[in-house]
Length: 114
Length: 111
Image (cartoon, rainbow over all chains, first blue to last red; front, side, top):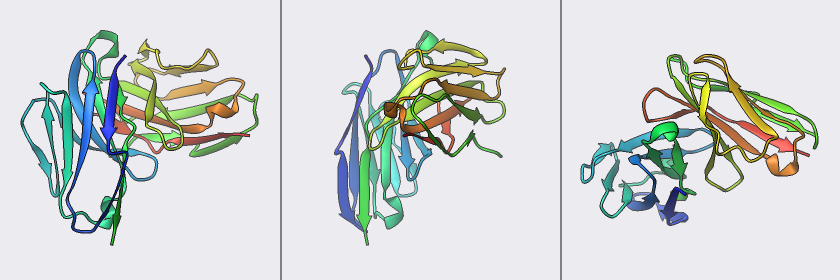
């Protein structure tokens, strides 16, 4: 059974701090690793990582994938209160009838205090 | 352009009643997914459509749950004889490739 595990489950920091969120995965026919930010109901797409060792960056957020060790990290530098959210990672399946199916981790709840 | 929309946004129903949840995907997205998210938990896969066929229904928790899709358009998730444990946010996502784009969800409360 496919499994994605995130750590820590929750994190409380102050504005300006840098955080690293972790995601390990065991996904049959692995295709890609995706990160989402969930503030209220709808998760919003952040990154998709398919190749190992290539950092993807968007503003203060960056992410990298290690396909040998089966994990990914999401870094947020100079955190702001607006970064407070649940961060979800998901493994995408490339195989047959399950093509594109995402297996989600339980999420990391990030709280940024002013 | 328009994103994924879902209706209703909230639904309160009595135990034992049937409910129907609707999802309108992004135009042109061939794949559509339904997920369930219980309070404080991650997203649980329910069913996946490619066009109007469902190659993966492995996540449907019981035969009370069913879903259908019209072409590459609207999908409905039906829960029959609702139980209290069905209370959750039901999220729909659509996709053209791998990255999925989510709707705002339907919060279902079974009393």
